[in-house]
Image 1 (cartoon, rainbow, N blue to C red):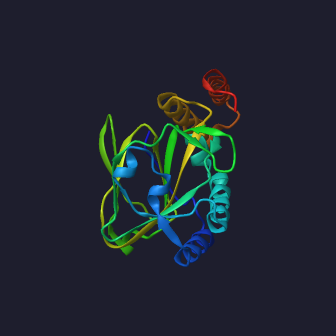
Image 2: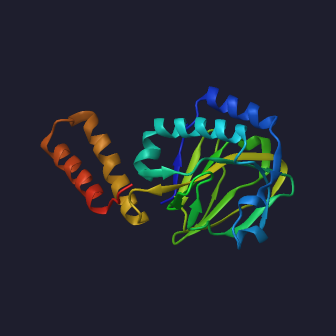
Length: 227
C-alpha cells in the first residue's frame, strides 16, 4: 500500500527542522547503506548517533504519534529512530530494496522493516528532480510531496531517488515494524478503519458500526504479532 499522509508536521515543527538542518554537519550517506545499495547511493546524511539527529528524530516521532492516518496505516509496533538525508545537485539514489532487518543503534534490538517512510522537509519548488520513484505490482509511482508530508510504502518495494538537478532536497526517512506483517492485511485493516471512522461521524452508536469495530479489533488480534 502506497499512502500519502499529509500535514504530519506542524508549521512550527517544520521550521524547527529546517532551521536545525540548515546548520547541521552532513556526512557521506553511504554509512547506512546495505551491501547492494551502497553501490548506487550518492547523498549526504546526518550522523545518526549525533545530538542533532536524536533531538530532531524525537520531534518526528512525536509528530507521528499525533497522526491518526499514520497510526492506522502502519499499525506500528516499533519505529526505527528517524534519519535525515540531503540530496544536492547531481546526487541520486539508484534502484534498491531496503534491508529486511536493521539493528537499532545503541541497542541489541533488531527491527524487521515492514514499511518504509519518507517525510519531505524541502518545499517542492525549492529543487528540481529528487522524486521518490516506487515500483510495485501496480506500476511505477513518482512522489514529490509538500514539506511536512509523508509517504508510506512497503519496504519490499523497489525504489529510487531521481537525480536532483537544482537546489537541495532534505528529508527524514525511517522504517516501521508493524504489528501486522503482511502488507495486504494492513491494507484491508486500513480500509476498514477508515470506513468505521467515516460511518461513526453520523451514526457512532449504530449496531452496524459496533459490529464493524468488533470485526476490526478481532482481525488485529488474528493477524497481529506480539511486540
